[in-house]
Length: 345
Image (cartoon, rainbow, N blue to C red; front, top):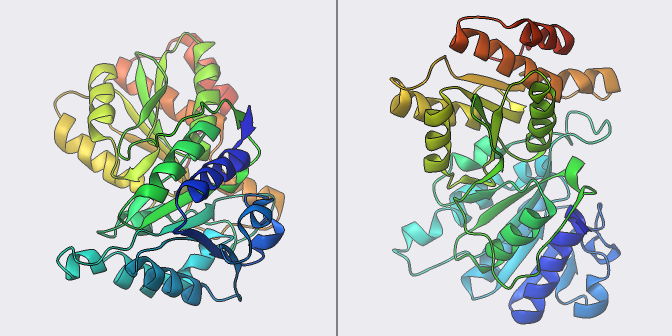
């Protein structure tokens, strides 16, 4: 058993031992990092490969781009995904485009680690989930692990990738535990997993909402509802085939994500499913996500932003009312227990 932080550290250590071109840039990482994800690495690899930097994200990413262009494989630790916004030119106009603009002569095999999402009243500037920004940009790979095994396998793959990888790590999952099979192989990008099988509806989720969706499925199972949960694992590329096959079979699709619902990546999934399955689905596609507001510092305000298991369960119950054109009493009781789902749509 490992935590997500331990699994990611294990993958990084394994690859740094194998490949001397890998090194890490970031603030205070020689002390282990904000979440302990670099604990002990400076003792093994030294300050030349675990490099403390000033508080200057543009400098970190710019240095990583230059280092990658001359044959290294840098890893940039941003501490919080929000801080990557200070380096958007380096990420979007340089790292993402140089391979294309050079006709493949230049590559930027860099990994940008972005601890993302809610965590203990971190407030508006330290709590954002910005995956849709990066998934929108050609040239970037976007990973969103939800389990220790995926944190290990996806980071391993990212460290071997020839393109820049935006590796988004949900802060609330750092200490969650799970089995991590020892392997020299990474997880391929664009391949999701079925986290729970089911027949009545499909939930597509990533990062923290995978866990919330599994809890929601348990609530629904008590009312006789069988729901499939798909963990995408990567957002670009994303596993369209897995999502479409599951939604076509169940006839109902719900997309759950912690980032803001408006113009979120769930919209891309919903649009694709609508185009491909418009004659197959039994009810309109639903999204359950965060409202378009800054994240509040106070716990009650943060709770308004959070996508809970009960809200996901209520969204599925509402959807099945439409699909089944009826409301079994036990499902009505569940909906009343869970409350409404105002962020669904």
